[in-house]
Image (cartoon, rainbow, N blue to C red; front, side, top):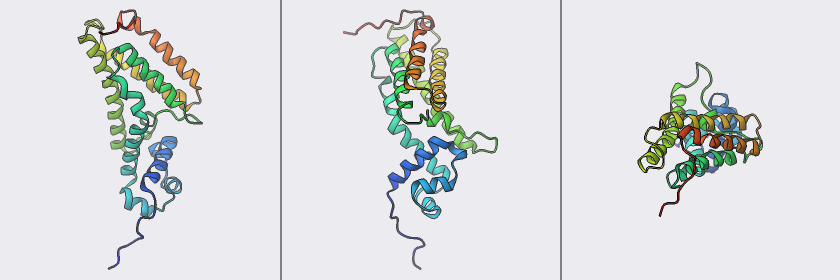
Length: 209
């Protein structure tokens, strides 16, 4: 029996990129199969043959998004010596990344979660895990700063990590609502101005020899 369907004639990576753009703009629930296939330039049988399902396509799109945009935001978090500078980098890189598209889209990980009670709970949980991973990365960076003597041992690393993660999530919503790059940078600057009061220190980093 001859194999069903035609051999793949499309660029899978390019199609995945286009799917990511649709999910980024529309979210998981609101991205219809017709929108996805139209943007990807393929039909439904080709989509299912190449990616398996809408859920599997979304998961690949999230991984592509994280590798393309997330690295610039989160990658240097551990390599920057000073915790204050590391957190500042996350927020300022967030402002630049979230405002590089027109119109601004914010963060796919924050905004693409299923919205309705009938939405896909597994997708919602996976996106929640990604967000928690980023919050934990901030908390671990603060804990490292405590161990290295940069920050006081009495500091509540989790509470401060929650604060800065919440700021970053809020920047995503502002970006989606049309905030300018400067407005997002202003939010980042205001959040970092609170560093001294949150950590009990002046927020000055000392060069390590």
